[in-house]
Image 1 (cartoon, rainbow, N blue to C red):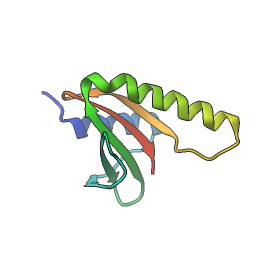
Image 2: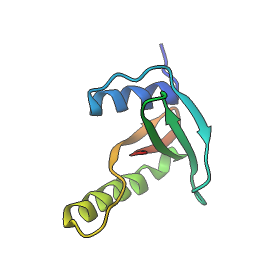
Image 3: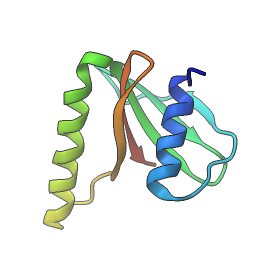
Length: 97
């Protein structure tokens, strides 16, 4: 069985956080000029998801690593990258909401 992009993302979030997600709603949100951006939530938690073509996966990996470095400096509050990867011909990154 082939999982949809959103099923893969939801599974990754659950795996990383250790918290099961209920049925999720997603809505397109402003905030991306080169990426598609969405809010994904189950009524208790909300996540920010960026999507692009699969060949842009390195961009999201670099973004995640950069955000982790900035957070480690403890000089500025930045979103926490939860997971990133490629699924269903798309690359994605999920940030805490």
